[in-house]
Length: 213
Image (tube, rainbow, N blue to C red; front, side, top):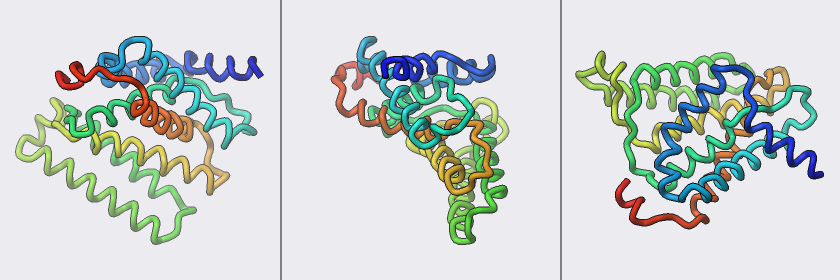
């Protein structure tokens, strides 16, 4: 119904805390500027709203019977991040080394707590974690201490691949283990990311601005 569609859309503009809002605004600031330049303001708005809508609908499809409401702009911003990856797959992002290592440690914590995974899956994911950690340490190189704060230039596909991998891992874990609480809309992020990537391919773009970026 129209009311349900409006509710899904309006949920993108609600957040559970100031920290939740600030985190989303930070990612929108980092990725949104260049993507808006490439598409123009109106196509960018359409990308944002459609990514959020399809992301939230993915969450509703898989978790519609859950009592916990889904709020936040994460699905829409995931779509913007995916569009950035489609437009500039070989771009390099300056990311603080401490943030990257913290992200990998968060993934490791999820792995250690995932008792529902069998040994083969656990070994595969732990191997991926080890490779990711080694890549970050190698990239930091001799400037390890400074790179932890100032940041290192990491390929966008690696950074956003880690982001998407964390969403998929936790999303699958929630589905196979009903005891895992749904405190984060993992599938909203995944749905928004997929929608943003598809939309970025279909929408008209500005070749000159893309070349300048």
